[in-house]
Length: 256
Ligand code: SF4
Ligand code: SF4
Image 1: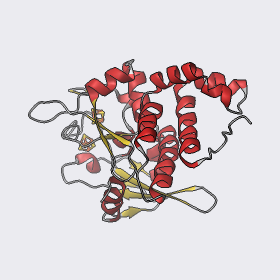
Image 2 (image 1 turned 90 degrees about the vertical axis):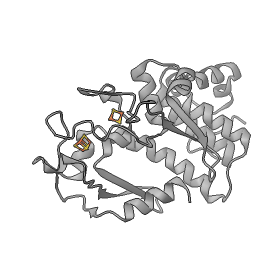
Image 3 (image 1 turned 135 degrees about the vertical axis):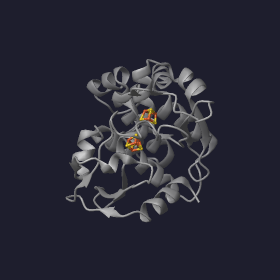
Image 4 (image 1 turned 45 degrees about the horizontal axis):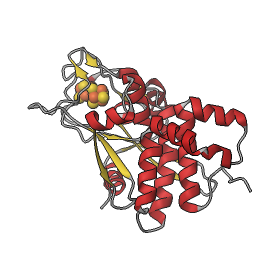
């Protein structure tokens, strides 16, 4: 069973919450369990999580991978999976938790933002992403005793999840296409995905060395954005992986 199947089974076991239904929740230093959940986590990092963390920490991807990530290959897709490495202390604490809270709060991973919601998505025939929400009500979490009311949409907005969900949904579409083939990508594509998705600084160097963008139909504005901006580079990376894996990218065409 793969990670996505396990997540789906977990979500299906939880109460679904309708988009216009409110729940009471609050997480702040006055909550008695503050910081209790920031340890011993299997915290998966998406490419966008890694981008935001590296940007906040001002770290190269080489240093990030060496010092902060546990990486293994997903058997179903053959793509690397990144997990945040917990500290080697008795609690297996998150490396970013401090007495006063999360030390990387503005760029904390999407999973930390989403809790106590679970979010499941599927794509309709027109390619629109459809969302369902679930409430992850854990016994140790005293945040549910707080009185502030949220709908799922209000929670997502408050937690700054729009950019995370947009980027992560795009990444999930790539994974879904690979899974549809019924076999993992070959090692060459796996290595390229590790570079293009998770090492955006090294990927910039690769683009410069190979002059890859010169060989694609693309206007100068987008070329400049890809060269300068890691978010534009990640968007390009996913399309380019689709081009080399499936022969089509959403907007990318090789020059004839
Ligand atoms: S990244 Fe921040 S919010 Fe997430 S587990 Fe670590 S300390 Fe907690
Ligand atoms: S257990 Fe719940 S309330 Fe307590 S710190 Fe974690 S999310 Fe916040």
